[in-house]
Each structure stands twice: as C-alpha cells, then as structure tokens.
Amino acid sequence: MKFQFLCERLYRLFLLCSVSILALNVLIILYSVFTRYALNHSPIWSDELSRYAIVASVMLAVSCAYVDGRHMRVSIIEQSVSQTPRRLIELYQWLVVTAVSLFFAYVSFKYALSLSKFTSMGLSISKTIPLMSLPVGFISLFLMSSLQGPFKKPTNEGEIC
Image 1 (cartoon, rainbow, N blue to C red):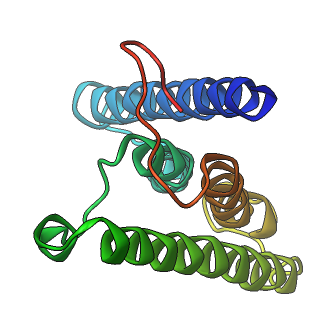
Image 2 (cartoon, rainbow, N blue to C red):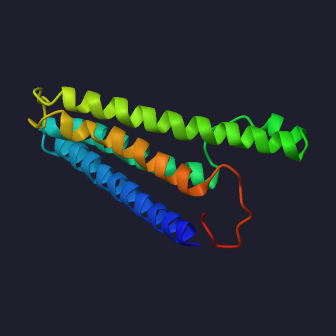
Image 3 (cartoon, helix red, strand yellow):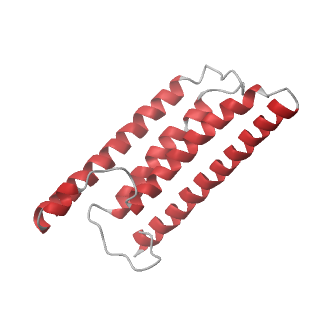
C-alpha cells in the first residue's frame, strides 16, 4: 500500500516536471522564433537551452511511459503464450529494465561529471549541469520499475500504479 502511494506520488512528480520543462521549452522556442524574425536577432542560448530542455523532459517522461505501458515494445509473444511463460517473460523484462536503467544511471552520472571542466557555448555553464538530466531520468525509471514490480497488477479506474 505504501509502495503504491509512493509510486503514484513519484509518477505525478515526474510527469509534472516533464510537462513543465516541455512548456518552458515551447516558450523558449517561441521567443527564439519571435526574436529571429521580428527583431532580426536570435539569442545564441535559446537553441542550446531548448535542446537540453527537450532531453530533460523526455528523460523524466520515460518513467511515466513505463508505468503506463506506453513505451515501445513487442508484446506478441506475451499475448500468445500461457500464464506461466508470460510471467517469466514479464519477470525477464522487468529485470532487464531495472538493471539497464541502474547501469545507465551510473554510466551517465560518471560521464556528466567527467565533463565538468567544459562549458557549453551558448549558455556558458558547465556541461555537467544539463547532462545531469540523463542520470536523473534513468534513476526515475529505476525507481518506478522497482516500485511497480515485475508483474502487472490490475488497477482500478483512475489508479496509476
């Protein structure tokens, strides 16, 4: 029960952050287009910030897509086998997603830290700051997959996890 409550709260937090970053990205792009065509001057930072924002938004939304089952996958084998092999396939998929997301979180964290001496051209900030969206996204996927567990549970109308 506590895991379900925590899973729902994290889901809402990740989705809210992802949507907020995406809305900010739209505003940045609109500002950039306006200044480019109306004022004949485009700030150099807007393109770079919009690229980083879209990556951050997607990395946070990936965990919500996993929970909803809206990620890209081939489920024809799951649907054509009986209950026991289906549960083994679900366990295997869960183990792969959980292990790979934890591994990618570790690798991307090390990579982001290794770029701390380099600055971005447009924003003039350390490249570590925008690249931290990668480990944060993979950690969010790891948390959501860990809290959800390997087997799909039937949910009531309106329930998330």
